[in-house]
Length: 132
Image (cartoon, rainbow, N blue to C red; front, side, top):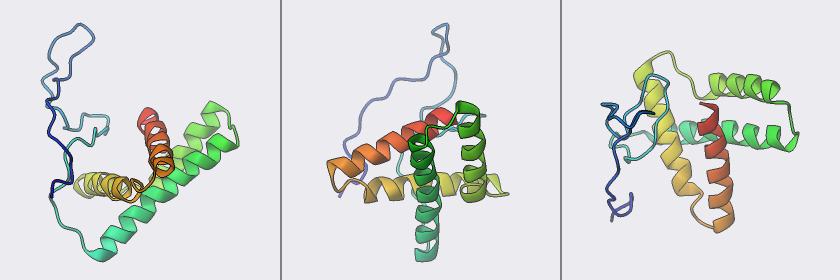
């Protein structure tokens, strides 16, 4: 069963002047933004699976809560940074990347059951992506 869906050709990232950036699609740049194009191939224990999902869910719910409260942009950024640091940060870069990618795909699978859940997940992930 193909969990990732159909394979699509993806254009290479270009700089503002239209030149190839040299980055491969799906690789993390220096600013820690992952495009989540490839399903992770590493294994997780059941405890890690639950821990990662709950950690990201806390951040996404915090985003929703702050948007509902209509916070000023600076306060929003500060509180979101604190939530990310508390839930999605690790001292080791390798573990941080694993946590980020795994938690995204876990919740992506969990929130695909209905159109409303998909919309909620996509809205929160887009806000998190823009923040990063």
